[in-house]
Image (tube, rainbow, N blue to C red; front, side):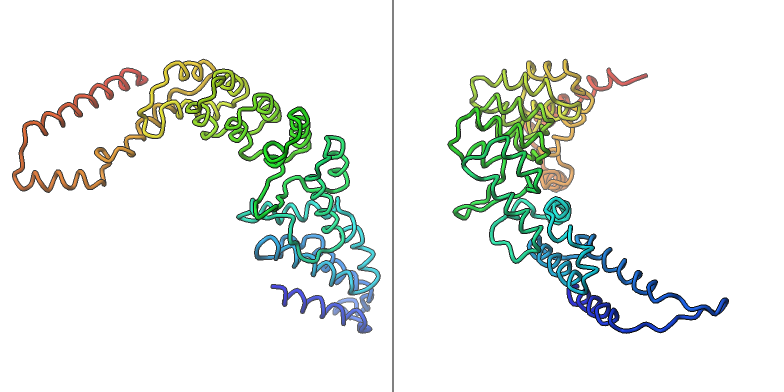
Length: 348
């Protein structure tokens, strides 16, 4: 890919210095201005430079390197193009969307860090320098705002002592800063649009109720792991945490909570919590569908499981045991009871 870009750029570079012949149209037999030929090439190259993130390939670091090389090469063609790309090359606010596009479209973006970056065009380098300051010990909400307004990238990781750190996690749990300061930093980062990812789950595990309220105020997502982590934690204040989740949860998030009340196999029973979720409009129909699907997790009732094959093989070979037959009838009666209960609610 890079060789193709280099060939295109070199071709256009040389053609800029060749006096173009007048192009004659067949109908009017009038020459087309050489400026038109130049403008077309310029537009092509500017399109390539300004949307370079759409054309580069490879992992994040390779994409950033390729983008840097392409922008530099196009800027070097002549003074006109250099001036046209001056903002892209030098302004971190303009370069930030380009870098974010590359990072966010990388499959393993959580492992893309600010460290060990290759040579970058000036604006990208400034972006990363500003972003690294978000990990400074003296960070404050005011400094976060200032760095962001200058071009810092909030959703970038850093590596320290061979460990990857996301910015939110770093400040909440890897710094010895006062809790009040951490809460203010969390609030500011979420206000400016940092991706919350699994921050609710982490906050629940670390039992920080004020941080939970801040995260949910900014609509951080509540996934099934958040509910299960809370339901099965030893947190003495879990009911208080549950009330906070219930207050902020969306319809889909409430449905997830209702499912988690029954566990992975549908064998858990938490009627009090289920009533709380239903009171907040958790959908019992979706919960019922989930519960019946959990039968697939029980090998004895999984149609393609070897249990069925073994049973049929033995029966085909004249096997019989009165106790085994009695147990199977108990299972049948249990399911008949379940079927009758569901059928009773079936719309007429």
